[in-house]
Each structure stands twice: as structure tokens, then as C-alpha cells.
Amino acid sequence: MIKKIEFIATGDTLINVELENEKTSIKFSDIYPYWDYATEENFEGGFAKIIEDKILFTMHTASMQGGIIGLWNAKTQKIEHISDGSYCVSADFVNEKIYILLCISNFETPASFSLWQIPVGVMDAFAESEKIDVELPGLIEEFNGDIGSVELEVQEDGYSIKLNDKVMFFSN
Image (cartoon, rainbow, N blue to C red):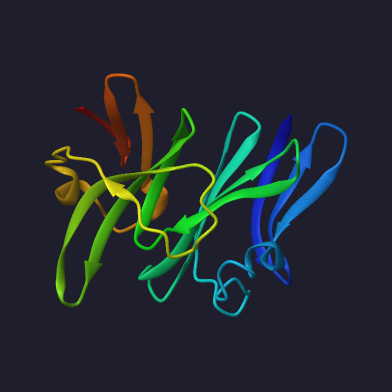
């Protein structure tokens, strides 16, 4: 059981993990074989969250234009998924799929949100996800640019997105 996580991104440690009876960490060097930007020097941000006995996490570089999404298993203490996480502002893990909420925005592209999914088990930092056909109106007007203000939750009948303490629901 995972008791606590701390996203530190210092030295070789990305995330400190406190389990029931021990302390361990997710390391940049665990990710580097799959994504050669997995270093403290290239790290520009990300997030992590506990989902049952797993840690879902992202790492970003180049103003979010590059990044990965990963899934770490506390039972095996191994990374079991790495795929493209560019522009990811939130994610969820349900029924062996990772759902990814993107906010694509740069100097050539007006900001927009989209929802994607990928099966767990991919170990390719450049693997693309499958876009989910769902309209997400009103999100861009509420978004303040802080990825910590967005939380995706996948439910059986749709998707809820908490944004700046406002919850919006979108059906499949």
C-alpha cells in the first residue's frame, strides 16, 4: 500500500515513495532507457497521483511540448507504462487504460482541450494515444494555465473535470 508520495525531481530521484514498510523512489534513471530527456536538467514539471497500488505520473520538458506519462506499480516497484505525455494537464487510470487530458497550446496554436486514451503496458515514450470523441466546451475559458488546477476523473458514464474548484461533467 502506498502511504505517501513526494514529487522532488532532484539528483536521480523523481518521486519519493513511502510504502507500508519501506521507502523507495521512482528514478530518472528508471525512465531514461525509454526517454532520454529523463534528467533533472531537462525536467520542467509534472504531476503524480496515487491510484490504488500504482502511481500515475508525468514529466514535461520544452514548455510541455515534450513529455511522458508513466505508471509505476508499488507491488513490483517497477514502471509498467511509458507513453507520450506532451501537453498533459491531468490523467486517470481505469480498467487497464490511461486517460489523458491535453491542453494543447503554443505560439502557433490556439489553446484547446482534448481527451485521449491508451492501454496500459506501452513502453514507448513516443507512442501516441487514441483520441476520444467527446466535446469539452467551456474548459478553455476556465483554465488559468496552472496544471495543478485541473483534475480528470473517469467514470462509467463519462468524464468529470475539476477545474479551479468547478466540476464539469462530460458524457461518453
